[in-house]
Image (cartoon, rainbow, N blue to C red; front, top):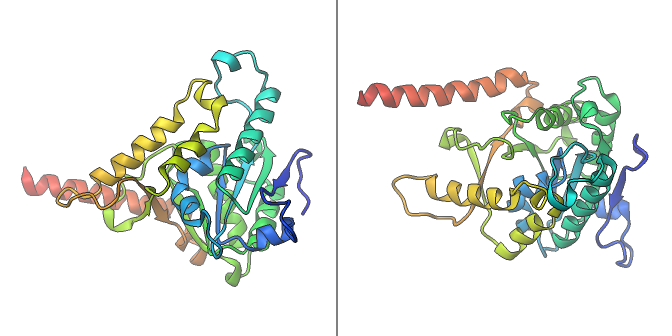
Length: 284
């Protein structure tokens, strides 16, 4: 598989295993997560990572689209150049793949400007090739209501790539939480993931991103806090069923029916608005 960017590569944690290579590692993928930045995968898709961990019939593969440049930094990283940070963040992402026992970790190292370019055909072709090689049962990516432009840019490219593939090569597509919680989504539309398994693994996967944590962003604590909050505040009249949870939005309709992305997410926003206004009207 060839990529546009010179430093793009596929990291195989178990490459030393007999008979393991890039093709076989990708081919056994059941759960594929496509994230914008290093650590986005571990923030949004810990439930699937844990569900695949140590299994022999289910395997997780990550795809990180950007190069890690432009991240905030302080402390020991305050004087690091963008090029320094790019190298460190890719190493951290590969370390997470090793800890999480991913089948593969794909690093496409695109600048954010390339991700936010709707006409970037090269990225679309790369995503198509990865999806075809992995043939996953489900793809996780950023939800289309995320507030980070680069995240939504990745989602739009995933949608474009899937729409160009044959129907039999279009798996289920679920949008996950990173730079905006899906707590606002009406409960009947939430896809709920159990994030409570292997709490030590969860902390290890987030803790590996020292360039972000020591660099001034406590994503490790924030991710854990959101997951606990989701589990507790999910149902007001029932005891907690999960200790830690993440929410997703099934976005498969945008692929199956070619639904306009703006119309797709607007419908869910309108349903949320209706839920709020009806409750207020009933009780005012």
